[in-house]
Image (cartoon, rainbow over all chains, first blue to last red; front, side, top):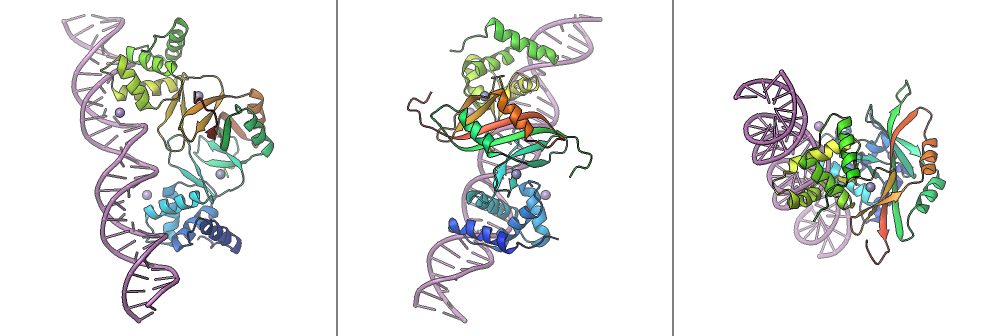
Length: 146
Length: 146
DNA sequence: TAGTCGTTTAGAATGATTCAAAATCTCAAT
DNA sequence: ATTGAGATTTTGAATCATTCTAAACGACTA
Ligand SMILES: [Mn+2]
Ligand SMILES: [Mn+2]
Ligand SMILES: [Zn+2]
Ligand SMILES: [Zn+2]
């Protein structure tokens, strides 16, 4: 069902883990593969169920562990909406999120860097930004919900 | 310790509640007063403890109820950061939030409307935005932490 | 006074996430 | 090959913010 990682993807995974002194494991590889296979910002539980198809004995705690590891080494971003379950995103480019309130689906929105620059300008001088999060909530009119 | 609502504030409260067919109660008034008294984006528990000073019998469930009511009638915004407790903000002007990672404190950042306009332009044509949330994470260099 | 309806309250339930401890795995050193 | 150390995975319990339930309360009206 789910393709393996290609050479480049496996390399990203290896590098990111190595940088923080950690190794590729079968579980980490499958969890990362699940994230790349369908970039729909799945929850932990969704990742867990998708990964189970490939690795039946996998535990939910391990999925939590793997995702936490990936976030820690910068491979994956967490995406939160209010108090709903945390979702995970392997898109490393700076981007915003659009949450469709009728479906709950989260879409990536490309973010021109000029906007990020402008945003940092609205801050008082002594505020040093590490990250900026931008999220839209609304509806999509599209007939074909992709 | 905590001032009463002034005429204008009480009027906002009354109007917002009336619009959705609800009434001012002593509990709602105190909870709203607490929010206005210190605009530091308190959690439910913080609101609860502050309100207890004025109304010793108040229950935590009621604070949850009041805040939910206020959010429902547009008097107050929820502010979430990752999976931490929800915080509450009575600032109705469009604004962003800056979260100081060394203190956990959340500051309001005035948001020029031109930036909001620009942001809606980066969306695909069939995405209709209802709300936009912008939040900064970082540190403040200021000696006098206000 | 009795009834209705919204609100408040206490306490139980929920559910995503985290924690603790035992089991398993990896791999280097013997 | 065997052993031991350290990392990882697993299971099941614990946490805790929030939501739910049902009973009590209050204001208002008939
Ligand atoms: Mn499940
Ligand atoms: Mn407390
Ligand atoms: Zn994303
Ligand atoms: Zn605010």
